[in-house]
Length: 327
Image 1: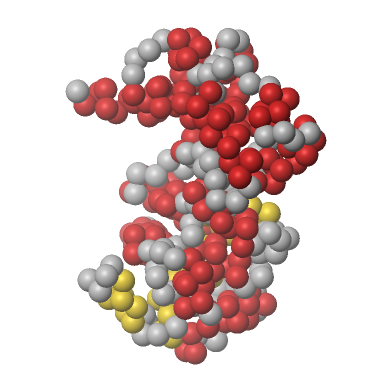
Image 2: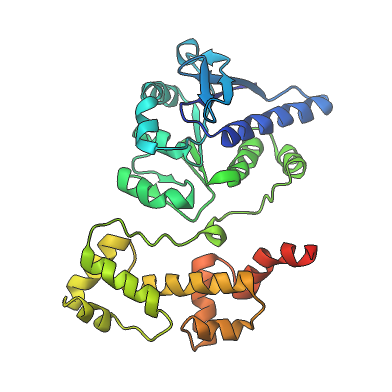
């Protein structure tokens, strides 16, 4: 039986905290129903005995404190929420304990925004990692030595697993159940919790972050211009001339400020506009293509799929089908 320590950090996200526990409890129940021994000995482990969340409405009690757990097989770091730098400071006592468990051979698992706590230990330096797509920019800024894959759902490298944002972390739990138990049990849990086991990307759910907090006024003015004029034919030379910068200097500063080239930025703005139209109206896809600034069907579909992981038709079906069926 594997001992599992589900950490109880300060500023824990309650929903994200309980998901892994529910998955492991259900795994044990299924194994017992099959006449097999349970796979996991589950403990909630905290810095303190209790953590109060939800503006004082919810109190979560730990089974053990860090000092009472010398060794564990698996550590699960749930998501944190609120002001991240404050959360990292409040949980400083976790870091040495996490490093010690990893050095003793424990599998370390972070879910969603729990990646910030894990990255703060230094254990992710030079390794691949995922977190919620919305947190990609601040994560990269705070932890430049970590190789963040903002579009993926799961990473598993050197005994460290990370899972993508929000409820997609459930896919990582299925992965771990299959890894430490078997596929039959993972499939059973996917059916019980109604989780699509084939999801492997956050890309269809990403809303483009325009990244305007960089402080470069010239680049910010160009971003605003692109957002107003994206339906027009825009060239890099034209954009650089707007702010009286040489093309190479402009491209360098634009990339540094937004993490996108000017062309990528235009494409992302156009694709976001197309996504909203696909979600909210029944216009012909070619009409939407023209309205967001494209004239070539092949180019539009190629760029759209690159940005979302889906064709325009697939995107429309996924994000409007349920609403139409209910009417």
